[in-house]
Image (cartoon, rainbow, N blue to C red; front, side, top):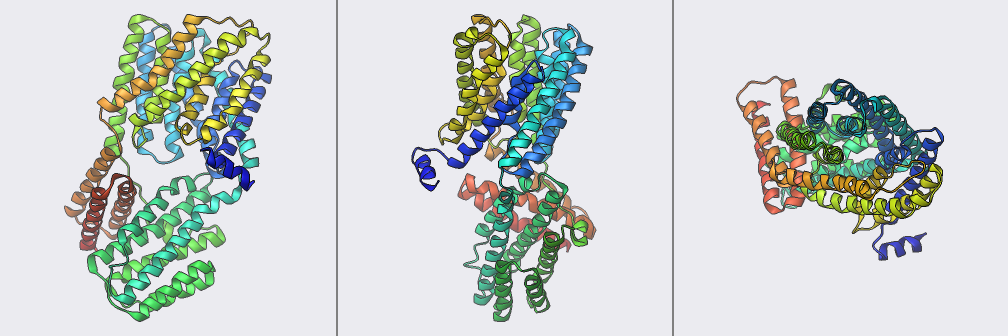
Amino acid sequence: MTALKSKFSQLGFDYTRFRFGFRTGLAACLSLLIAWSLGLEHPQWSAMTVWAVSQPTRGLLLEKAAYRALGTLIGTVIGMLLVVTAGDNVLQLALGLTFWVAACVYVGNLLHGLISYGAILAGYSASMVALLSRTPDAWLPLGIDRLLTVFVGVLTALLIGWLFTYSRAEQTLVNQFRRQTAENLKLLAEAYQSGSLQHLNSHDRLSKLALLESQLVDHGSGSPAAHRSAKTIRQVLNAQMGLFAQLEIKGIIQSDELSEYLHKCSQALISNKTSRINAHLQDTLTNFDHAPLYPYWHEFVDATRARLEFRDTGKTANSVRQLSVLLHRDWRGAKQAAIRTLVTMSIISCIWAYTGWFQVAYLLLGASVMLTLFSTADNPAKTMYYVFLGQSAGAITALLMQAFIWPQTNSVLTMLLSLMPIILLAGLPMSHNKTAAGAMDFNLVFLLLMQPALHYQFNVSEATSIALAVITAPLVAMASYRLMFPTDLRSRQQQLLLSLEHDLKNLNNQLVSTNQLQRYRARLYHRLFKLYAMSGSLGVEAKVIAAQYLLRVQHQVSQHE
Protein backbone atom coordinates (compact mmCIF):
# COMPACT_ATOMS: atom_id res chain seq x y z
CA MET A 1 0.00 0.00 0.00
CA THR A 2 2.83 2.40 0.86
CA ALA A 3 4.54 1.63 -2.47
CA LEU A 4 1.28 2.30 -4.32
CA LYS A 5 0.80 5.64 -2.58
CA SER A 6 4.41 6.56 -3.37
CA LYS A 7 3.92 5.72 -7.06
CA PHE A 8 0.73 7.78 -7.17
CA SER A 9 2.53 10.72 -5.57
CA GLN A 10 5.38 10.55 -8.09
CA LEU A 11 2.87 10.82 -10.93
CA GLY A 12 1.19 13.84 -9.35
CA PHE A 13 -1.82 11.98 -7.95
CA ASP A 14 -3.12 12.04 -4.40
CA TYR A 15 -4.03 8.50 -3.36
CA THR A 16 -6.55 9.59 -0.71
CA ARG A 17 -8.43 11.78 -3.20
CA PHE A 18 -8.32 8.99 -5.80
CA ARG A 19 -9.81 6.52 -3.34
CA PHE A 20 -12.54 9.02 -2.47
CA GLY A 21 -13.22 9.72 -6.18
CA PHE A 22 -13.37 6.04 -7.12
CA ARG A 23 -15.65 5.27 -4.18
CA THR A 24 -17.94 8.15 -5.18
CA GLY A 25 -17.92 6.93 -8.79
CA LEU A 26 -19.06 3.49 -7.66
CA ALA A 27 -21.87 5.08 -5.65
CA ALA A 28 -22.87 7.21 -8.66
CA CYS A 29 -23.05 4.11 -10.88
CA LEU A 30 -25.14 2.29 -8.29
CA SER A 31 -27.53 5.24 -7.99
CA LEU A 32 -27.93 5.28 -11.80
CA LEU A 33 -29.08 1.67 -11.76
CA ILE A 34 -31.40 2.17 -8.79
CA ALA A 35 -33.01 5.26 -10.33
CA TRP A 36 -33.47 3.44 -13.65
CA SER A 37 -34.94 0.36 -11.96
CA LEU A 38 -37.48 2.62 -10.24
CA GLY A 39 -38.55 3.93 -13.63
CA LEU A 40 -37.33 7.51 -13.09
CA GLU A 41 -36.98 9.59 -16.24
CA HIS A 42 -33.72 11.36 -15.32
CA PRO A 43 -31.57 8.72 -13.57
CA GLN A 44 -28.44 10.77 -14.30
CA TRP A 45 -29.67 13.34 -11.77
CA SER A 46 -29.26 10.77 -9.01
CA ALA A 47 -25.61 10.27 -10.02
CA MET A 48 -25.10 14.04 -10.06
CA THR A 49 -26.48 14.14 -6.52
CA VAL A 50 -24.00 11.48 -5.38
CA TRP A 51 -21.09 13.59 -6.67
CA ALA A 52 -22.51 16.71 -5.03
CA VAL A 53 -23.25 15.13 -1.65
CA SER A 54 -20.30 12.77 -1.02
CA GLN A 55 -17.86 13.93 1.64
CA PRO A 56 -14.68 12.54 3.23
CA THR A 57 -16.09 12.43 6.78
CA ARG A 58 -19.32 11.03 8.18
CA GLY A 59 -20.46 14.21 9.89
CA LEU A 60 -20.14 16.27 6.71
CA LEU A 61 -21.75 13.52 4.64
CA LEU A 62 -24.79 13.24 6.92
CA GLU A 63 -25.45 16.96 7.22
CA LYS A 64 -24.81 17.77 3.56
CA ALA A 65 -27.16 14.97 2.55
CA ALA A 66 -29.84 16.39 4.83
CA TYR A 67 -29.47 19.93 3.49
CA ARG A 68 -29.34 18.59 -0.08
CA ALA A 69 -32.67 16.86 0.45
CA LEU A 70 -34.26 19.84 2.21
CA GLY A 71 -32.93 22.41 -0.25
CA THR A 72 -34.09 20.29 -3.20
CA LEU A 73 -37.55 19.87 -1.70
CA ILE A 74 -38.00 23.62 -1.15
CA GLY A 75 -36.52 24.54 -4.53
CA THR A 76 -38.62 21.97 -6.37
CA VAL A 77 -41.84 23.23 -4.80
CA ILE A 78 -40.96 26.83 -5.70
CA GLY A 79 -40.02 25.77 -9.25
CA MET A 80 -43.36 24.00 -9.69
CA LEU A 81 -45.26 27.04 -8.40
CA LEU A 82 -43.38 29.30 -10.81
CA VAL A 83 -44.26 27.09 -13.78
CA VAL A 84 -47.94 26.93 -12.75
CA THR A 85 -48.31 30.68 -12.20
CA ALA A 86 -46.33 31.75 -15.28
CA GLY A 87 -47.87 29.34 -17.77
CA ASP A 88 -46.54 30.14 -21.25
CA ASN A 89 -45.17 33.55 -20.21
CA VAL A 90 -41.41 33.04 -20.48
CA LEU A 91 -40.49 36.46 -19.08
CA GLN A 92 -42.72 36.05 -16.02
CA LEU A 93 -41.25 32.61 -15.36
CA ALA A 94 -37.65 33.74 -15.78
CA LEU A 95 -37.97 36.90 -13.71
CA GLY A 96 -39.86 35.11 -10.95
CA LEU A 97 -37.09 32.54 -10.82
CA THR A 98 -34.48 35.33 -10.84
CA PHE A 99 -35.95 37.00 -7.75
CA TRP A 100 -36.16 33.66 -5.93
CA VAL A 101 -32.53 32.75 -6.73
CA ALA A 102 -31.33 36.24 -5.73
CA ALA A 103 -33.14 35.91 -2.38
CA CYS A 104 -31.54 32.49 -1.81
CA VAL A 105 -28.05 33.75 -2.60
CA TYR A 106 -28.56 36.65 -0.18
CA VAL A 107 -29.54 34.32 2.65
CA GLY A 108 -26.83 31.81 1.73
CA ASN A 109 -24.11 34.46 1.96
CA LEU A 110 -25.24 35.45 5.44
CA LEU A 111 -25.20 31.92 6.81
CA HIS A 112 -22.28 29.61 7.58
CA GLY A 113 -21.46 26.04 6.70
CA LEU A 114 -23.84 23.58 5.13
CA ILE A 115 -26.97 25.53 6.04
CA SER A 116 -25.62 28.13 3.61
CA TYR A 117 -25.29 25.38 0.99
CA GLY A 118 -28.90 24.34 1.64
CA ALA A 119 -30.18 27.88 1.11
CA ILE A 120 -28.24 28.28 -2.13
CA LEU A 121 -29.37 24.84 -3.33
CA ALA A 122 -32.99 25.85 -2.83
CA GLY A 123 -32.32 28.58 -5.38
CA TYR A 124 -30.89 26.61 -8.26
CA SER A 125 -33.05 23.52 -7.57
CA ALA A 126 -35.99 25.71 -8.58
CA SER A 127 -34.11 26.41 -11.82
CA MET A 128 -33.78 22.69 -12.57
CA VAL A 129 -37.57 22.30 -12.51
CA ALA A 130 -38.67 25.65 -13.95
CA LEU A 131 -36.19 25.78 -16.83
CA LEU A 132 -36.16 22.14 -17.94
CA SER A 133 -39.95 21.95 -18.27
CA ARG A 134 -40.41 22.28 -22.04
CA THR A 135 -44.20 22.50 -21.65
CA PRO A 136 -46.33 23.78 -18.74
CA ASP A 137 -48.08 20.41 -18.37
CA ALA A 138 -44.70 18.70 -17.74
CA TRP A 139 -43.99 20.52 -14.49
CA LEU A 140 -45.54 17.97 -12.12
CA PRO A 141 -43.83 14.84 -13.52
CA LEU A 142 -40.54 16.71 -13.79
CA GLY A 143 -40.78 18.01 -10.22
CA ILE A 144 -41.58 14.58 -8.81
CA ASP A 145 -38.80 13.04 -10.89
CA ARG A 146 -36.36 15.67 -9.62
CA LEU A 147 -37.26 14.97 -6.00
CA LEU A 148 -37.07 11.19 -6.31
CA THR A 149 -33.79 11.13 -8.23
CA VAL A 150 -32.19 13.44 -5.66
CA PHE A 151 -33.45 11.27 -2.78
CA VAL A 152 -32.06 8.15 -4.50
CA GLY A 153 -28.70 9.87 -4.90
CA VAL A 154 -28.68 11.11 -1.31
CA LEU A 155 -29.49 7.68 0.14
CA THR A 156 -26.93 5.94 -2.07
CA ALA A 157 -24.22 8.43 -1.16
CA LEU A 158 -25.07 7.98 2.53
CA LEU A 159 -24.93 4.20 2.32
CA ILE A 160 -21.65 3.93 0.42
CA GLY A 161 -20.05 6.86 2.21
CA TRP A 162 -20.94 5.55 5.65
CA LEU A 163 -19.54 2.11 4.87
CA PHE A 164 -16.21 3.38 3.57
CA THR A 165 -15.56 6.52 5.63
CA TYR A 166 -13.32 6.19 8.68
CA SER A 167 -15.06 7.40 11.82
CA ARG A 168 -11.71 8.28 13.39
CA ALA A 169 -11.21 10.98 10.76
CA GLU A 170 -13.63 13.10 12.79
CA GLN A 171 -11.07 13.33 15.63
CA THR A 172 -8.27 14.92 13.60
CA LEU A 173 -9.26 18.51 14.36
CA VAL A 174 -9.82 17.76 18.06
CA ASN A 175 -6.30 16.36 18.41
CA GLN A 176 -4.79 19.30 16.52
CA PHE A 177 -6.69 21.70 18.78
CA ARG A 178 -5.44 19.99 21.95
CA ARG A 179 -1.81 19.90 20.78
CA GLN A 180 -1.93 23.53 19.64
CA THR A 181 -3.38 24.65 22.97
CA ALA A 182 -0.67 22.74 24.84
CA GLU A 183 1.99 24.38 22.66
CA ASN A 184 0.53 27.84 23.34
CA LEU A 185 0.64 27.26 27.11
CA LYS A 186 4.23 26.05 26.85
CA LEU A 187 5.28 29.21 24.97
CA LEU A 188 3.32 31.34 27.43
CA ALA A 189 5.18 29.64 30.29
CA GLU A 190 8.51 30.43 28.62
CA ALA A 191 7.45 34.06 28.18
CA TYR A 192 6.68 34.39 31.89
CA GLN A 193 9.98 32.72 32.72
CA SER A 194 11.96 35.25 30.65
CA GLY A 195 9.67 38.21 31.35
CA SER A 196 9.61 38.98 27.61
CA LEU A 197 7.15 38.54 24.73
CA GLN A 198 9.95 38.46 22.18
CA HIS A 199 9.77 34.73 21.45
CA LEU A 200 6.04 34.30 21.97
CA ASN A 201 5.20 35.56 18.45
CA SER A 202 1.52 36.23 19.06
CA HIS A 203 0.77 36.65 15.36
CA ASP A 204 2.02 33.15 14.56
CA ARG A 205 0.06 31.73 17.50
CA LEU A 206 -3.15 33.45 16.43
CA SER A 207 -2.68 32.50 12.77
CA LYS A 208 -2.51 28.83 13.76
CA LEU A 209 -5.57 29.21 15.97
CA ALA A 210 -7.36 30.92 13.06
CA LEU A 211 -6.63 27.92 10.85
CA LEU A 212 -8.24 25.66 13.44
CA GLU A 213 -11.18 28.02 13.83
CA SER A 214 -11.83 27.99 10.08
CA GLN A 215 -12.33 24.21 10.24
CA LEU A 216 -14.92 24.33 13.01
CA VAL A 217 -17.85 24.72 10.61
CA ASP A 218 -17.05 21.33 9.11
CA HIS A 219 -16.30 19.81 12.51
CA GLY A 220 -19.68 20.96 13.81
CA SER A 221 -21.59 19.18 11.04
CA GLY A 222 -23.61 16.01 11.27
CA SER A 223 -25.38 16.14 14.63
CA PRO A 224 -26.32 18.39 17.58
CA ALA A 225 -23.43 16.84 19.51
CA ALA A 226 -20.98 17.86 16.77
CA HIS A 227 -22.39 21.38 16.89
CA ARG A 228 -21.91 21.55 20.66
CA SER A 229 -18.39 20.17 20.26
CA ALA A 230 -17.52 22.95 17.83
CA LYS A 231 -19.03 25.50 20.20
CA THR A 232 -16.92 24.37 23.15
CA ILE A 233 -13.76 24.39 21.03
CA ARG A 234 -14.53 27.87 19.70
CA GLN A 235 -14.98 29.11 23.26
CA VAL A 236 -11.48 27.87 24.18
CA LEU A 237 -10.05 29.47 21.03
CA ASN A 238 -11.73 32.78 21.89
CA ALA A 239 -10.28 32.60 25.39
CA GLN A 240 -6.80 32.09 23.95
CA MET A 241 -7.21 35.06 21.65
CA GLY A 242 -8.21 37.10 24.69
CA LEU A 243 -5.05 36.01 26.52
CA PHE A 244 -2.75 36.93 23.63
CA ALA A 245 -4.54 40.21 22.94
CA GLN A 246 -4.39 41.28 26.58
CA LEU A 247 -0.69 40.40 26.71
CA GLU A 248 -0.06 42.64 23.72
CA ILE A 249 -1.89 45.50 25.48
CA LYS A 250 -0.66 45.09 29.08
CA GLY A 251 2.69 43.36 28.60
CA ILE A 252 4.12 40.51 30.67
CA ILE A 253 5.89 40.10 34.00
CA GLN A 254 8.68 37.77 35.07
CA SER A 255 7.34 34.97 37.26
CA ASP A 256 9.11 31.63 37.66
CA GLU A 257 6.28 30.32 39.78
CA LEU A 258 3.59 31.13 37.22
CA SER A 259 5.82 29.74 34.47
CA GLU A 260 6.06 26.43 36.31
CA TYR A 261 2.29 26.21 36.75
CA LEU A 262 1.72 26.91 33.04
CA HIS A 263 4.30 24.26 32.07
CA LYS A 264 2.38 21.72 34.15
CA CYS A 265 -0.88 22.73 32.45
CA SER A 266 0.74 22.21 29.05
CA GLN A 267 2.04 18.77 30.02
CA ALA A 268 -1.34 17.83 31.44
CA LEU A 269 -3.03 18.67 28.13
CA ILE A 270 -0.53 16.45 26.32
CA SER A 271 -1.33 13.59 28.70
CA ASN A 272 -5.03 14.21 27.91
CA LYS A 273 -6.24 13.08 31.36
CA THR A 274 -9.19 15.12 32.57
CA SER A 275 -8.49 14.95 36.30
CA ARG A 276 -4.87 16.00 35.84
CA ILE A 277 -5.80 18.87 33.49
CA ASN A 278 -8.46 20.21 35.87
CA ALA A 279 -6.13 19.99 38.88
CA HIS A 280 -3.34 21.97 37.20
CA LEU A 281 -5.75 24.53 35.75
CA GLN A 282 -7.11 25.17 39.25
CA ASP A 283 -3.62 25.39 40.78
CA THR A 284 -2.61 27.94 38.16
CA LEU A 285 -5.79 29.94 38.68
CA THR A 286 -5.29 30.00 42.46
CA ASN A 287 -1.70 31.23 42.11
CA PHE A 288 -2.10 33.51 39.09
CA ASP A 289 -0.26 36.65 40.17
CA HIS A 290 -0.53 38.73 36.97
CA ALA A 291 -3.65 40.82 37.70
CA PRO A 292 -4.36 42.22 34.17
CA LEU A 293 -4.40 38.67 32.76
CA TYR A 294 -6.31 37.02 35.62
CA PRO A 295 -9.86 37.49 34.18
CA TYR A 296 -8.71 36.12 30.82
CA TRP A 297 -7.04 33.12 32.39
CA HIS A 298 -10.19 32.53 34.42
CA GLU A 299 -12.20 32.56 31.20
CA PHE A 300 -9.76 30.12 29.61
CA VAL A 301 -10.07 27.77 32.60
CA ASP A 302 -13.89 27.90 32.48
CA ALA A 303 -13.94 27.26 28.73
CA THR A 304 -11.44 24.39 28.99
CA ARG A 305 -13.37 22.76 31.81
CA ALA A 306 -16.55 23.04 29.76
CA ARG A 307 -14.76 21.44 26.82
CA LEU A 308 -13.54 18.56 29.01
CA GLU A 309 -17.00 18.08 30.51
CA PHE A 310 -18.51 17.83 27.04
CA ARG A 311 -15.79 15.45 25.88
CA ASP A 312 -16.30 13.13 28.81
CA THR A 313 -20.08 13.30 29.24
CA GLY A 314 -21.49 14.65 25.96
CA LYS A 315 -23.19 17.44 27.90
CA THR A 316 -22.55 21.14 27.44
CA ALA A 317 -21.58 23.00 30.59
CA ASN A 318 -23.73 25.86 31.87
CA SER A 319 -20.82 28.25 31.43
CA VAL A 320 -20.80 27.63 27.68
CA ARG A 321 -24.56 27.94 27.35
CA GLN A 322 -24.37 31.32 29.06
CA LEU A 323 -21.45 32.72 27.06
CA SER A 324 -22.08 34.08 23.59
CA VAL A 325 -20.56 32.55 20.48
CA LEU A 326 -21.41 34.93 17.64
CA LEU A 327 -20.14 34.61 14.09
CA HIS A 328 -19.28 37.24 11.52
CA ARG A 329 -21.95 37.89 8.91
CA ASP A 330 -21.07 39.76 5.73
CA TRP A 331 -24.22 41.83 5.19
CA ARG A 332 -22.67 44.06 2.53
CA GLY A 333 -21.21 41.11 0.62
CA ALA A 334 -24.55 39.27 0.75
CA LYS A 335 -26.35 42.30 -0.68
CA GLN A 336 -23.79 42.65 -3.46
CA ALA A 337 -24.04 38.94 -4.35
CA ALA A 338 -27.84 39.21 -4.52
CA ILE A 339 -27.72 42.33 -6.73
CA ARG A 340 -25.14 40.69 -9.02
CA THR A 341 -27.33 37.62 -9.37
CA LEU A 342 -30.48 39.69 -9.92
CA VAL A 343 -28.96 41.87 -12.65
CA THR A 344 -27.19 39.08 -14.55
CA MET A 345 -30.11 36.66 -14.53
CA SER A 346 -32.53 39.46 -15.46
CA ILE A 347 -30.48 40.27 -18.56
CA ILE A 348 -30.42 36.61 -19.59
CA SER A 349 -34.17 36.35 -18.90
CA CYS A 350 -34.88 39.28 -21.20
CA ILE A 351 -32.73 37.74 -23.94
CA TRP A 352 -34.66 34.48 -23.60
CA ALA A 353 -38.02 36.25 -23.75
CA TYR A 354 -36.97 38.34 -26.78
CA THR A 355 -35.38 35.56 -28.84
CA GLY A 356 -37.51 32.63 -27.76
CA TRP A 357 -34.50 30.32 -28.04
CA PHE A 358 -34.95 27.40 -25.68
CA GLN A 359 -31.15 27.04 -25.42
CA VAL A 360 -31.05 30.29 -23.41
CA ALA A 361 -32.92 28.42 -20.66
CA TYR A 362 -29.82 26.24 -20.25
CA LEU A 363 -27.66 29.36 -20.04
CA LEU A 364 -29.98 30.75 -17.36
CA LEU A 365 -29.84 27.43 -15.52
CA GLY A 366 -26.04 27.40 -15.60
CA ALA A 367 -25.85 31.04 -14.54
CA SER A 368 -28.16 30.40 -11.58
CA VAL A 369 -25.73 27.72 -10.39
CA MET A 370 -22.54 29.69 -11.05
CA LEU A 371 -23.80 32.91 -9.44
CA THR A 372 -25.06 31.17 -6.31
CA LEU A 373 -22.91 28.16 -5.53
CA PHE A 374 -19.62 30.01 -6.04
CA SER A 375 -20.66 33.39 -4.62
CA THR A 376 -19.10 32.52 -1.26
CA ALA A 377 -15.69 31.58 -2.75
CA ASP A 378 -12.66 33.73 -1.93
CA ASN A 379 -12.06 34.48 -5.61
CA PRO A 380 -15.11 33.37 -7.61
CA ALA A 381 -13.90 34.86 -10.93
CA LYS A 382 -10.72 32.79 -10.78
CA THR A 383 -12.75 29.73 -9.81
CA MET A 384 -14.91 30.23 -12.92
CA TYR A 385 -11.83 29.71 -15.11
CA TYR A 386 -11.34 26.19 -13.76
CA VAL A 387 -15.07 25.54 -13.84
CA PHE A 388 -15.15 26.52 -17.52
CA LEU A 389 -12.30 24.14 -18.35
CA GLY A 390 -13.93 21.27 -16.48
CA GLN A 391 -17.36 21.90 -17.98
CA SER A 392 -15.90 22.20 -21.49
CA ALA A 393 -14.21 18.81 -21.14
CA GLY A 394 -17.44 17.32 -19.77
CA ALA A 395 -19.52 18.80 -22.61
CA ILE A 396 -17.11 17.53 -25.29
CA THR A 397 -17.12 14.04 -23.75
CA ALA A 398 -20.93 14.10 -23.64
CA LEU A 399 -21.19 15.14 -27.30
CA LEU A 400 -18.78 12.42 -28.40
CA MET A 401 -20.79 9.77 -26.55
CA GLN A 402 -24.09 11.11 -27.90
CA ALA A 403 -22.71 11.08 -31.45
CA PHE A 404 -20.84 7.79 -31.62
CA ILE A 405 -21.98 5.46 -28.82
CA TRP A 406 -25.59 6.11 -27.87
CA PRO A 407 -26.99 5.74 -31.44
CA GLN A 408 -25.60 2.19 -31.39
CA THR A 409 -27.46 1.21 -28.21
CA ASN A 410 -30.90 -0.40 -28.11
CA SER A 411 -32.04 0.20 -24.51
CA VAL A 412 -31.87 2.78 -21.73
CA LEU A 413 -29.97 0.30 -19.57
CA THR A 414 -27.27 -0.05 -22.23
CA MET A 415 -27.02 3.73 -22.47
CA LEU A 416 -26.55 4.00 -18.71
CA LEU A 417 -23.96 1.21 -18.68
CA SER A 418 -21.99 3.11 -21.33
CA LEU A 419 -21.73 6.08 -18.93
CA MET A 420 -20.15 4.05 -16.16
CA PRO A 421 -16.55 3.82 -17.44
CA ILE A 422 -16.45 7.64 -17.65
CA ILE A 423 -17.96 7.98 -14.17
CA LEU A 424 -15.48 5.50 -12.65
CA LEU A 425 -12.49 7.08 -14.38
CA ALA A 426 -13.52 10.51 -13.06
CA GLY A 427 -11.62 9.70 -9.87
CA LEU A 428 -8.34 10.16 -11.75
CA PRO A 429 -8.70 13.87 -12.67
CA MET A 430 -10.13 14.54 -9.20
CA SER A 431 -6.93 13.21 -7.63
CA HIS A 432 -4.35 14.90 -9.87
CA ASN A 433 -2.89 18.24 -8.81
CA LYS A 434 -3.34 19.86 -12.23
CA THR A 435 -6.90 18.74 -12.95
CA ALA A 436 -8.57 18.54 -9.53
CA ALA A 437 -9.93 22.10 -9.67
CA GLY A 438 -12.29 21.40 -12.59
CA ALA A 439 -12.90 17.68 -12.18
CA MET A 440 -16.18 17.94 -10.27
CA ASP A 441 -17.60 20.26 -12.93
CA PHE A 442 -16.58 17.74 -15.60
CA ASN A 443 -18.63 15.08 -13.82
CA LEU A 444 -21.70 17.24 -13.27
CA VAL A 445 -21.94 18.71 -16.78
CA PHE A 446 -21.23 15.36 -18.42
CA LEU A 447 -24.13 13.83 -16.50
CA LEU A 448 -26.41 16.85 -16.97
CA LEU A 449 -26.16 16.55 -20.76
CA MET A 450 -26.64 12.76 -20.88
CA GLN A 451 -30.42 12.32 -20.95
CA PRO A 452 -31.16 8.70 -21.98
CA ALA A 453 -34.12 7.90 -24.24
CA LEU A 454 -35.24 4.92 -26.31
CA HIS A 455 -34.49 4.99 -30.05
CA TYR A 456 -31.96 7.72 -29.47
CA GLN A 457 -31.12 9.93 -32.46
CA PHE A 458 -28.25 12.41 -32.29
CA ASN A 459 -29.28 15.93 -33.35
CA VAL A 460 -26.02 17.77 -34.00
CA SER A 461 -27.32 21.33 -33.92
CA GLU A 462 -29.56 20.89 -30.87
CA ALA A 463 -27.04 18.93 -28.78
CA THR A 464 -24.20 21.31 -29.65
CA SER A 465 -26.22 24.44 -28.97
CA ILE A 466 -27.34 23.12 -25.55
CA ALA A 467 -23.75 22.19 -24.65
CA LEU A 468 -22.51 25.64 -25.72
CA ALA A 469 -25.24 27.32 -23.67
CA VAL A 470 -24.24 25.33 -20.58
CA ILE A 471 -20.50 26.05 -20.81
CA THR A 472 -21.15 29.73 -21.59
CA ALA A 473 -22.60 30.12 -18.08
CA PRO A 474 -19.23 30.16 -16.25
CA LEU A 475 -17.93 32.75 -18.74
CA VAL A 476 -20.95 34.97 -18.10
CA ALA A 477 -20.51 34.45 -14.35
CA MET A 478 -16.79 35.24 -14.61
CA ALA A 479 -17.58 38.55 -16.33
CA SER A 480 -20.23 39.28 -13.73
CA TYR A 481 -17.85 38.56 -10.83
CA ARG A 482 -15.17 40.78 -12.39
CA LEU A 483 -17.34 43.72 -13.46
CA MET A 484 -20.07 43.89 -10.82
CA PHE A 485 -18.78 44.28 -7.24
CA PRO A 486 -15.41 42.61 -8.06
CA THR A 487 -14.78 39.92 -5.46
CA ASP A 488 -11.50 38.40 -4.36
CA LEU A 489 -9.72 37.71 -1.08
CA ARG A 490 -8.55 41.31 -0.74
CA SER A 491 -12.03 42.72 -1.31
CA ARG A 492 -13.36 40.29 1.30
CA GLN A 493 -10.68 41.56 3.67
CA GLN A 494 -11.90 45.12 3.06
CA GLN A 495 -15.49 44.07 3.78
CA LEU A 496 -14.29 42.47 7.00
CA LEU A 497 -12.45 45.63 8.03
CA LEU A 498 -15.60 47.69 7.41
CA SER A 499 -17.52 45.31 9.68
CA LEU A 500 -14.86 45.65 12.37
CA GLU A 501 -14.94 49.41 12.10
CA HIS A 502 -18.71 49.40 12.39
CA ASP A 503 -18.61 47.30 15.56
CA LEU A 504 -15.82 49.37 17.10
CA LYS A 505 -17.74 52.58 16.39
CA ASN A 506 -20.90 51.20 17.96
CA LEU A 507 -18.98 49.95 20.99
CA ASN A 508 -17.31 53.33 21.42
CA ASN A 509 -20.55 55.31 21.24
CA GLN A 510 -22.63 53.49 23.82
CA LEU A 511 -22.63 52.05 27.28
CA VAL A 512 -23.02 48.30 27.22
CA SER A 513 -23.95 45.73 29.81
CA THR A 514 -21.70 42.80 30.67
CA ASN A 515 -23.78 40.49 28.52
CA GLN A 516 -23.73 42.91 25.57
CA LEU A 517 -19.96 43.28 25.92
CA GLN A 518 -19.54 39.50 25.79
CA ARG A 519 -21.56 39.41 22.58
CA TYR A 520 -19.57 42.23 21.02
CA ARG A 521 -16.31 40.59 21.99
CA ALA A 522 -17.32 37.18 20.65
CA ARG A 523 -18.25 38.66 17.26
CA LEU A 524 -15.12 40.86 17.16
CA TYR A 525 -12.90 37.90 17.99
CA HIS A 526 -14.48 35.81 15.24
CA ARG A 527 -13.85 38.60 12.75
CA LEU A 528 -10.26 38.85 13.97
CA PHE A 529 -9.81 35.11 13.44
CA LYS A 530 -11.03 35.50 9.85
CA LEU A 531 -8.67 38.46 9.40
CA TYR A 532 -5.73 36.40 10.64
CA ALA A 533 -6.72 33.49 8.41
CA MET A 534 -6.75 35.79 5.36
CA SER A 535 -3.40 37.35 6.22
CA GLY A 536 -1.60 34.09 5.47
CA SER A 537 -2.53 34.44 1.80
CA LEU A 538 -2.38 38.24 1.48
CA GLY A 539 1.18 38.84 2.68
CA VAL A 540 3.05 41.01 5.18
CA GLU A 541 0.82 44.08 4.92
CA ALA A 542 -2.25 42.01 5.79
CA LYS A 543 -0.42 40.55 8.80
CA VAL A 544 0.38 44.05 10.03
CA ILE A 545 -3.27 45.08 9.59
CA ALA A 546 -4.43 42.03 11.57
CA ALA A 547 -2.00 42.86 14.41
CA GLN A 548 -3.18 46.49 14.46
CA TYR A 549 -6.83 45.52 14.67
CA LEU A 550 -6.07 43.03 17.42
CA LEU A 551 -4.72 45.90 19.52
CA ARG A 552 -7.61 48.21 18.62
CA VAL A 553 -10.24 45.62 19.45
CA GLN A 554 -8.64 44.67 22.74
CA HIS A 555 -8.12 48.29 23.76
CA GLN A 556 -11.79 49.05 23.05
CA VAL A 557 -12.97 45.96 24.92
CA SER A 558 -10.73 46.74 27.90
CA GLN A 559 -12.25 50.22 28.23
CA HIS A 560 -15.68 48.67 28.85
CA GLU A 561 -14.54 45.99 31.30
